Image (cartoon, rainbow, N blue to C red; front, side, top):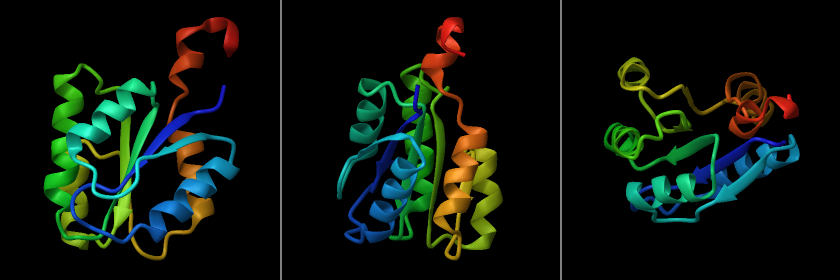
Length: 139
C-alpha cells in the first residue's frame, strides 16, 4: 500500500508553488498525496489527516509563523490520539528554530535548497505505512 501524506499550507501564507512541487514529487515517488490548498487552519489540517487515514503531514510555511503552526498541529494530533501521524515540513525557517521544532516533535524540517528527491527519499525511509503495519498480511 502506498503511504498517505497530507500536504498543507497553514495560515495566511498565499505562496503554494513549493508545496505543489513537493506534493507532485511525493506522488511521483508512489505515495498517495492529499493537498489541502491554501489558508488552512491547524484544525482543518488535522481533521483532513485523520479523515484520510494519513501516515504523515507535510507543512509548508513561508509566513514566519512556523513555530506556532507546527506546534499547534502537533498539539491537536495529540488531543485526537493521532500522534502516530508523522509531521514534517519546510519553508523559510531560521536555523535557530530547527532544533526547537525537532524537540517539539517535528520529525524533519527541509529548508531552501532541499531537493524533491531528498524529501521523497526521507519520506520513504522515515514514514511508515500505517495500513501495512496494521495488517501483517500486507507486509
